[in-house]
Image (tube, rainbow, N blue to C red; front, top):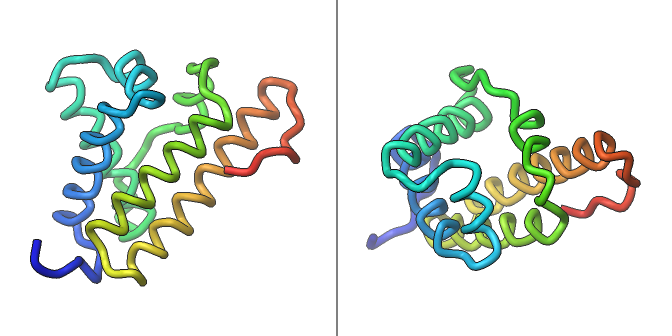
Length: 136
């Protein structure tokens, strides 16, 4: 890539999601969680990545394609905790910075952080924990 991406398009969101999840699958902390939740086949990963592209397309491009329930999906994973959220965000931010301009990467970081914090707080409430201590 000669120049970083400055705008969000379906194609670039697909690149972001593929790049991020390729890295996450290799991550010592996140990899086992994702492999357990998504599976190990490329078909399973293709479906997951397509769903996440729909999510980011809905969030950043207002396409309305995503119809999932992220809180329910994450609540089914009792092993995830604050360390997983911090690592996810760090890896996501690093991936965004490697692909996009500083301004676009910052937008992704802000949205990702807000979503991560919301998920983490929702999970804390569902688990009977102190949601005020969440710092995604």
